[in-house]
Image (cartoon, rainbow, N blue to C red):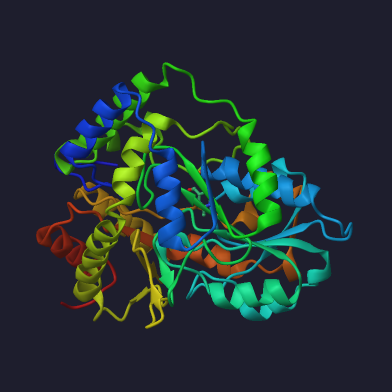
Length: 411
Ligand SMILES: Cc1ncc(COP(=O)(O)O)c(C=O)c1O
């Protein structure tokens, strides 16, 4: 890809203020530990009784799948239901736990389960249902929770990408029995790595607590790498500098690879000094992303040749991690992405395949009713746009011009 400009808006990311970075460094050197304060703040805001921190969301999922499997008294229940379009680390976590994945197709308009497909599942074999709530937009969580309850299945509310999104007065991640959030790069708030588990279930809480206390702590020298990595991140996320990593293909930024090689450790106390500060202003961060979404939406809403994700109703408050649109033709989508990137806008095609089409997943999965066309449609037509603080009005104008030109929309 050619890059003509020395300005590049990252596809997603959290802006870390200079004073936050400085306090994080000072607090880390003073060996402060805000892990308890962070989990208390999460419990209070998201109305959950228990909250645990660890190395990553994917490691959290693998542990949770393993624990619910060990605690399972019904030998018939061996399946984990997953949406056909989700992050590849989700089936990988089920593989680690030795469970069978039942891939259920999604409705490409909402990215949530296709209700007809979902309701045709034989839930007597299902141990756990997962959600995905991608890009900050919660799935039909009330509905999925009701089906899980009716069928006595666990529900793992995967809110890795939807921290702070809400349905009614309930937060994404707090539906069902257990929820996870991610603090990885590109999430609503980030410390470059980190996973959060929440639950209101006393039995699971005891199992999780026992399991997590056995995890090793990050090495004592991690303080140096944490400070270095976060300093670099907070500098490079700036559009005046992000063109550098964006032009370095060997960094593999935004590439999704399938792996079961997870790091299992406690969450770094140093990183909690930053994530606690970011969590304290997560409403402000979410509002900022929403304002960018609205600018893009207003610029493109008249274009009848593109479609926005139709998930925003009066009852739903997304976290707006990215703006999601669908382009009818895959070649046009790919050309738009190329032009936007060449013009300094971090647009992406997100996950290239439905999990149903991943060779690595085939050996331990069943495609429910052999249908995954919804997930594959999304993989071929989705286009993500950045809702990041730095997105300016001229950037939005560029997005509008490029998308309207490629989709033959007169403007
Ligand atoms: C939907 C979803 N679930 C789980 C994860 C795993 O989270 P982590 O990156 O913290 O391992 C991700 C990561 O991108 C994700 O997008």
